Amino acid sequence: MENPIYIQEPSLITPLGFSVSENVSAIEKEQSGIHEQHQKDILDTPFYAAMIASEKIDAAFKKLGNPSRFMKLEKIMLLSVAETLEKSKLHISEKTALIIATTKGSIDALDPDNSFSGERAYLPVLGKKIQSFFGFKQEPIVVSNACVSGILAVAVAKRLIQNNVYENAVVVAGDLVSKFTVTGFNTFQALSDGPCKPYSKYRNGISIGEAAASVVVSSERNKYTAIEVLGDGSCNDANHISGPSRTGEGLLKSVQSAMQEAVISATDIDLISAHGTATIYNDEMEAIAFNRANLQQVPLHSLKGYYGHTLGASGLVEAIIGFESMNQNKLFTSLGYDESGISKPLKIIQKVEKKTINTFLKTASGFGGSNAAVLFKKVAFEH
Amino acid sequence: MQNGTVICNGKEIVSADNEQGFSEFAKRVYKNQQWEYPKFFKMDRLSKLTFLTAEILLKELTISSEVKEQLAVVLSNKSASLDTDRKYQDSINSIENFYPSPAVFVYTLPNIGMGEVCIRHKIQGENAFFVFDDFNPLFLKHYAESLAQNNKATQVLCGWTEIDEKGYNSFLYLASPNGTLPHTEETIKKLYTQS
Image (cartoon, rainbow over all chains, first blue to last red; front, side):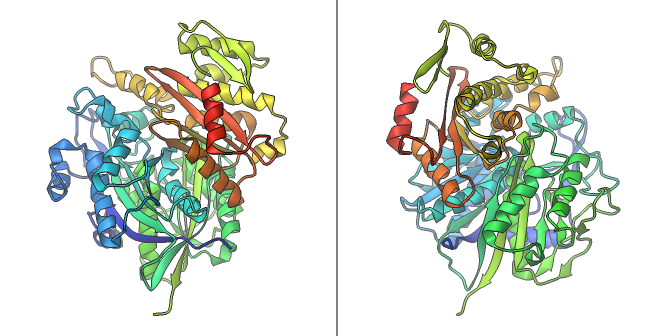
């Protein structure tokens, strides 16, 4: 048995709020952060996305520094890390890793209309900003593996700590809604003309979102109850670079790898927070993979109806809501779902409900055939 | 692959004029191989670099398809996909000259080249792409060994595939229990500098 690894002090900076409690309370009331956006600097026609107002970020950022000196993504990631560090009182040592997950980083730095230098688009430059701001001693590890980055980063932290490379890690994930990503998904005709509707018969594409999230991953725990990282897997479909596998092979293998490591069976899992982007191909692939894994009876949601697809941040943002589900023993609704639009059954959560949740599975899938699955368990200790 | 040269296991496989640009050089390396893979021509520059380097190394190794299926792939670089990101950005800069293409956008992720390698060789093992300021042999060692320790893989294809305005360089190696060199930071660094 490997040394147990725990999650501590999550923080969220999202359109639903700048604290985990604000986020959870919005989700409990089924409030979506996705709205119609009229931003001609991003797209010449209105589009649906979950965005954080720059004024709100700058007002919050004033406690950390001068908002005009940092880019938007830098600010939300710094705000998130600051909160996690403050709450965890983590001592940053030589054995503390800084792991940064992002799909596109500050890609807006490439835009000629942006006043910041193009250098800021380099991910190591983003990494160094965060590192030097808080005085991390080790070079940051940037995970940039498409839309699985956020949850894969948690697995990376756990693996490195278990193998004594580090004692603990701050994992921060973040991505923005930018002209780059919105026009890109638009060329795929993948953008929904309303808030996205994962797994619904009436879905017609994704909504994009922006967010930052962070946690401490550590071999230590500082509470009477803790969340343990039980197992993980991140396998490739080896099928297509932009289309998910029709058989759900990579996702199935990732889930099996995590379950094998955790030594648990399908009936032990109480909640799945799936990827659920609301594209026909993604949702169908997940339905097939979860059925092949015998998980069709496990309550499942996609949180994309609240946050949109926050790309590299999504895995960590959504995992953090899952931790709150475990803490509160509450299932949160898969917003946007009505009638099934998938060919295999899934137990999609349709209303907020009390339920004991001890074990929770988070999955993600992305371009390049990437998939990731991480299993978490709530553990109680004697006082 | 670097400065117009391909070296595999100490052997020079292709050597071209250093002044030749990457695309010309990549075509030459492709033609030098004994296979055809039309999809290659659709790839962006980072994917071509990743793909060719993996192709040359995997041909050199005799590993069964069963082992290949479970192979882990751990790649890294400095510039992520900025080489293609800039190309895509150019296509959306002005309303008068607005021509974004899904075929370019799909390559604006650093892990796509890794996906191309996985498709070509039916590799369904662990995958991760990392970004560092510079080649980081100690991290590759740590992460590859963590995968092995945690029973996630027995063999790991590790490396660095970087392309940017200034040039390109790639270096891949296989970490395996059947290897002949110790998997240490020094060895990895030495192999990288020699190649």
